[in-house]
Length: 158
Image 1 (cartoon, rainbow, N blue to C red):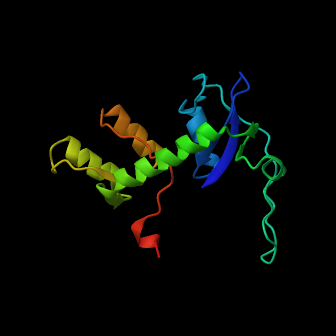
Image 2: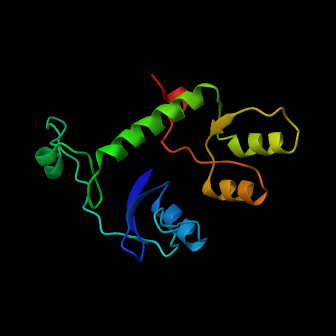
């Protein structure tokens, strides 16, 4: 995954997670990107500081704004405590929901279609799909939603 800082014409800045730079370009060309604050679809990559890895023996220092204020930071400034709490609550809610959901891996699109068209019994599932497959499912009227936080596949958990 790659994270880009994105920006709309109203100067709203937000993050976007993509499989690759080409994935960002593809989604932009197909009109799949929009500002979460104002809905503008004219989204561009905002300037970002390069991520320079530290040496293995070096300890990570907190960002300057975090050292001074003790607050979490996001692009453009400090994150309000209410937002931090909201993200924590959403992560707990997602984790609880996933306990009753079945991991189907990269068979998500196939399983979703089979349930939608009555070929399999309906159940709550989660898995992986490409942006193109997700768009196709949406166009077919199959209800899906992205997870808010990344999920580690069961086979990758220690």
